[in-house]
Image (cartoon, rainbow, N blue to C red; front, side, top):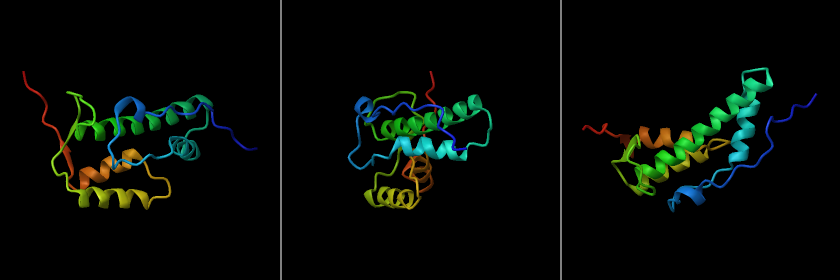
Length: 126
């Protein structure tokens, strides 16, 4: 029996809301959602849907965090800041992410942190 994804609604283009960095690729959010569905460790439809929504929220959060770190959007509560804007380091992270069969924004965020492009922002003090 072939399973169907619990939701069939297409994702909105989040870039139209937050502004796009020229180097930030557009990954297929529907493909990422389908991957989350295939890898879902749960059996009930409600738990599957919650898992998929959680995975997609991670993707949206990563897009926002990357954009905020590079000041593509203004967000005073962003968790990361760009401490190294080296295009070669960014390109290396992009290339590494693209080598995955399903590149994702959350993986790209992790790679940018690991290679030292992004760092955790110090919390604001009053």
